[in-house]
Structure formats: C-alpha cells, structure tokens
Length: 156
View 1 (cartoon, rainbow, N blue to C red):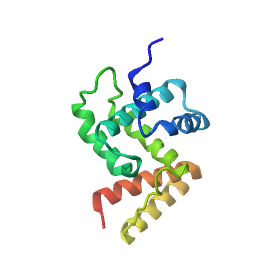
View 2 (cartoon, helix red, strand yellow; view 1 turned 45 degrees about the vertical axis):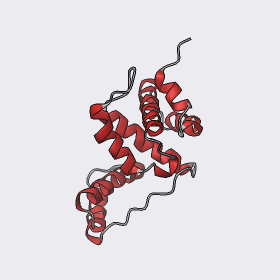
View 3 (cartoon, one colour; view 1 turned 120 degrees about the horizontal axis):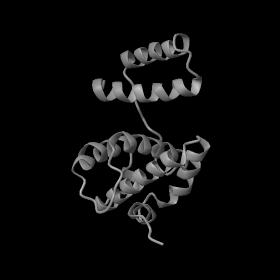
View 4 (cartoon, rainbow, N blue to C red; view 1 turned 180 degrees about the horizontal axis):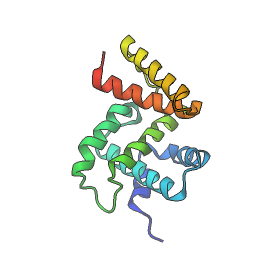
C-alpha cells in the first residue's frame, strides 16, 4: 500500500498530534468525505511547509497561515500532488487553528478591535440576524471572518 505524501508529511510534522482531533472536528461538523480529504491534504501540505521552514507550533497563527497561502502556494515546488487551491487551503487551515486552540496547543487569538471596527461589526451582526435571519452559529462564523478582514485592512 502506497502512502500519500501528505499523509507522511502530516505524520512527521508538529501537527501530527492533532490529526485525530482535526478529523473528529470535520466529522462533527458533517463535512463530506471528499471535503474532509481535501482539508486533511491541505493540513498535511501545511505541516510539511512548517517542517521545511523549521517552524514550531509556537509560531502557528493567522499570520503564518496567511504567509503560507500567499507566499508559498503560488510558487509551491513541493514534490508530488499537493493541495494548492488557496480557497480550500485557507478554509482547512482556519479550521485547523480552531482545533489547535480548542486542544490548547496554541494560544487563543488576541484581536484587539478598534472601537469603530467593533461598532461596524455589531451593525453587521445585527443585519445578519434581523435582515438575513442567519442562525447564531452562522453569524458567529461570519462575524469572526469579517472581524479579521476589517482588522487586516484597517488595523487600528
């Protein structure tokens, strides 16, 4: 039986202890086998890159994920078939960060939002609730992504 390169990369990376938790997270959230496979493939690729860059879990956060997606993926020369689709990789690694934080393997995210960003986020969340009728869990996810976007774009 031939092992996929990404499986070996994941097994030998700093992410290896979280593989089971990550798989369970994807199952709990009812991801299809094909999406779960693509996400695990992306996490394996990320784990390989972390190893090549000599990065430990202490380095892993949104900025490292951003660097991987924007700097490594466009010029990726990793051997074999790698998950290189930025949208898939970004989603997979966003879930990975949640799992790593839930397992207390990396610290909680510290996003200090400026008051104007906080106010805009509150209006956006209210719109999602009262106009769009989205469920609380869906609103929370969207709020998290928009908060990150606004903080990245406008900082303080």
